[in-house]
Image (cartoon, rainbow, N blue to C red):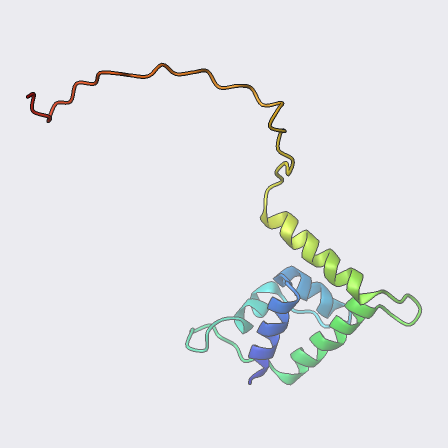
Length: 127
């Protein structure tokens, strides 16, 4: 398993976007652009594929620890951070819809449609 595979799996598992990865890397003073990160997630046969080095993965993991746990002076609860990112990911991907349906009794009644007794068909032979 390559560093790129590990990086991809962490990105999917934690539902991270490229800009969030850039922010995590900035926590450990490692500056990288979104396009450089996008090159790590390409297929190996793609012409702009770049192999993720040990230094980048190491800095990402160290930044991820700070992102999830916080610092010694300002600790965080990792569960809250993970659930907060999942909630924002689902909120941005789906439009807001009302979850409550009107009750059965409060719905307007449908009008009775009269029964159509005789219909003339074009293809039917008259007997």
